[in-house]
Length: 296
Image 1 (cartoon, rainbow, N blue to C red):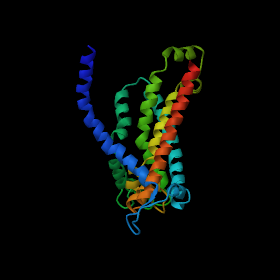
Image 2: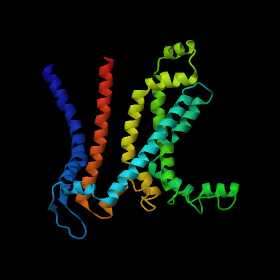
Image 3: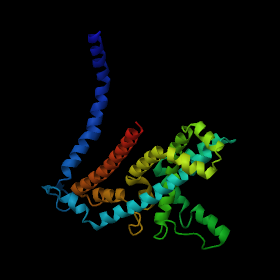
Image 4: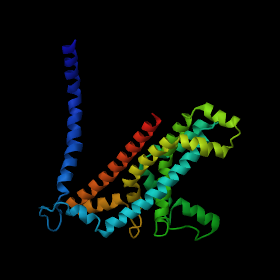
């Protein structure tokens, strides 16, 4: 029996090896190569000599004014977008958790943005927001007179517009998570609060939100890690402009790699991004484990 099990494992491994080889070639090798390159001064234009410089690329990150600005822009984008996604997501989840006619249809409509490609969404919104031919300005000019339309992707509104579209695109993800959390809350807890005469707001703030804290934490970590690495939406909409007002970290990384061809420096930037994402994930795991330990 033992020999037969070994033979089965060997037979199964024949089908696993190609997948492992693909993972090694496509993921592991480039990662290791990028670590190696990040310790070198290596440009593809100008002086193309590859020179070992140790941690100089990593030190230069915090001395590079454009990179530091992109970090602050990313932080601003992150706080506003994730904050509003959590608030709106919770309110929509509360609404969808009720039993009403057409509930399933409304759920599908709410979740539609999440099912679409961010690039296609960005292109669609870019057309909608076009100053001369966009449908939004056409409606505003028709209703409120000529001049009511705005340059939505100009210096004044670019970041606000980007955040608004990001919220519209990713709030459904938060809704889905919180709705699942709401449906897992025991009904007897809600019924007991009704018997005690708790108002709607009391039930929300003293029962629902405390019970949903783990779900909120997961949603925050997921949305934070994805928002930090966001590239398609800001790149297609504004390419980081105007005047670098929407130049998030992902766009700055792209520019260093594929506009300036600073291969070593851009590799260091990419590893900084990986480290930040990994640190957030570790933080989430530690918080979760602490909560589980307390409950035990």
